[in-house]
Length: 242
Length: 254
Image (cartoon, rainbow over all chains, first blue to last red; front, side, top):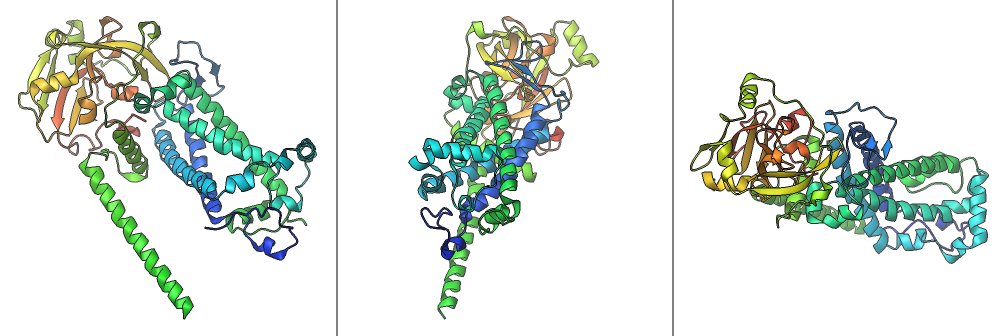
């Protein structure tokens, strides 16, 4: 299998380091399959929500009972969200199977440990403050960040992969009366079917926020070079303006 | 020379992998068919998702687990209703007469077809269960349902070996079907009471189906006729229910 993109400790002026792909083939393929399935999940998820844009806490809830949040959205897809549901569950299968391939290969190939787990140096207070301050000043990433993730990226990616995605899959399954007949603890653990639905909504919202920040950062770092890196595997170090 | 060898080896490997994949897929379809893991609405691109969900859940539920049941204190004070009570003359006449003349016809692939009166159904051993009902729109409520298990009625009429589905026709225009796993499931009820009272008309009087391991729309109301069959091809558009005809899944275990 293709070795990972992050060449730890290799000085970037060594030409061979620049020739190596920034992202392994498996990461690139699963990234784009995930992009398509996530887009389908968001669109279809909104369609499902528009059949009943009210959120509740506990086991039950409906019109005529107190809600947790009344989203400022219309009830326009009542009885018409069938396509949304079918698309959502098809895309969910693709998302989960693709995600399992990504996570399994990332564990076996040590991608997570080598490239994403923050090192002690990453976590040093001075380094964290420097990275945060760079972001706050909307500073373009330096060339070194083409080959290694900064501490904020590492924490965010690990949080998305190992917290938000498991949470959204489990809260989705907790809404299934068939699955909860097999694993009742799944839904009682989330304090009820309606609570699971509400947590599912907020986890999805956080993932959409992540997507916007992710795309904004890609644009800031150099859209074409980062897109090339995630597609062909090869992109120039730093932004294209250099 | 060595380049030729490598590419030939690559070609052979690719061919073997492709052949293994194709025969693996063919074997999977064969097994899935044999064990009833393919839903009637398996066609089209969305059918792939429907089939994966149905097959996975049927395999996970091969030990026939029960849907969650609740305490009396958890019964919802509000039980919303979707859809209207049938307005046509036959139903309204039966409703006005307290369903004395109502009969539930059970026929098809059974040894002893029969038309049950409401009184007869109520004399059979009853089951009460407090279960959660979720609408696919997103709302839900908990209620206590009392009725005769469908399995009891199926045993009375004597279902033939080759039966694969039980089809339900109500007084309104909808219709639906269950596979035998759900038809024989102990929590699948022909419910005639809700929260200790007669089933209210908006909730499906005199008798509605209750299938607590699926979304609310599978629990169809105003039952009139049940038929046992080995194929759904000649009913409606052959998709097993009216739901796929209006864009929703036949299997609603989600």
